[in-house]
Image (cartoon, rainbow, N blue to C red):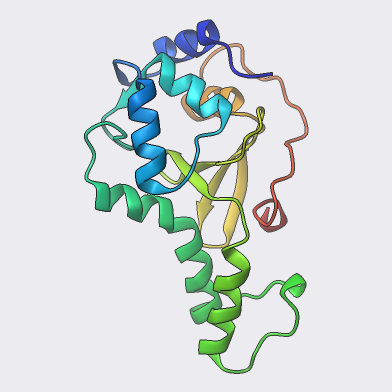
Length: 180
């Protein structure tokens, strides 16, 4: 079930953050076209109720486009870093090529097939999939943790908001769930 507008406003009001005017339909369309992803329904519902700003929140309205691109690229870049520097390799990718350049090429091709992760706050990300009730991941290279079974449960957990411990099994997300 999509995050309701009323619940999204309630969550935003409880956050220890400044909340700016909601993103408009035109702003969503511009962001999605510019950066090549679509916000998942719950993330869209939250930002359509109000835009948390400042600190570690991504500045979807006035942010530096290069900085937003870097934040969007960080999860994949972190995996590639671990492939190159730490020998990371998933068995599902087949045998690891002996040359690092080839391993990076295979890993990049495999990562191109994974769901894009979109920053929510700091290094917390939610998948850009057309589904509701998706998890929020904490992502630092290949150190990936489910930080909330859903976006609302993540916000309750991250910001210690009252009344939000409704644990469910997080929906699996291709590739990213395998790292948890």
